[in-house]
Length: 246
Ligand SMILES: Cc1cc2nc3c(=O)[nH]c(=O)nc-3n(C[C@H](O)[C@H](O)[C@H](O)COP(=O)(O)O)c2cc1C
Image (cartoon, rainbow, N blue to C red; front, side, top):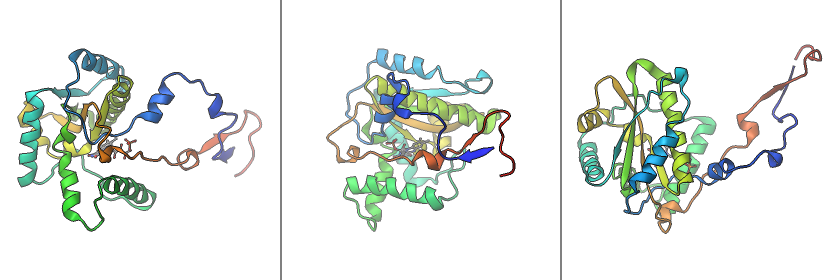
């Protein structure tokens, strides 16, 4: 068996194209939206596309609480009020710590975010202000709160993660901007009460969406990705020609 970081016989430039590579390359997290609402027909198309997400046993455990108009305003106001006086208690524990390369990547994207806003490292108040922008839904006209069924455990959450990514890509394909937000899963008890979500549902994350304000400095940066060699290890060798040892 040969273990290598180089893909065997593939040429990324020769890979079939279509729309997906462009959408994957272009999508980004928007943190300042214009107020214009998204037409219902467009949201309908988006939800139909997201519904095609695969899931374990085709359980499709996601359920979306989606807001528009006054309902978005009620969520924004209620959340912002709630976070000032309650500790975060997410249904799924947030990462215990980021170490090594994960710490570096987190720092890089944090640096990009704060630099775009002119917030310096020691400016704790500025950082808190930006954190709170999450609960103002970055002024988006719509929010989608994604829940899963408690009994389905971690894989139910995995299915919802896949749903979230389909939602983001589908939205981009429709000219919409999105912000996936774990921050919106910080106060699940508030959301359960606010939306009448039953106790057996767990909040995975939220997505603010609408149209991007492309003049906003916070929308001016794009994140990087690690090189493939850091993410993929190929195991190769033809049948009958396996190398011994190794
Ligand atoms: C599950 C998930 C949770 C996230 N939570 C937040 C969040 O709470 N607040 C935020 O500003 N960005 C959040 N993001 C956005 C990430 O920071 C962003 O996806 C990452 O830095 C890569 O940048 P890009 O989306 O622009 O490609 C989240 C993304 C994902 C996938």
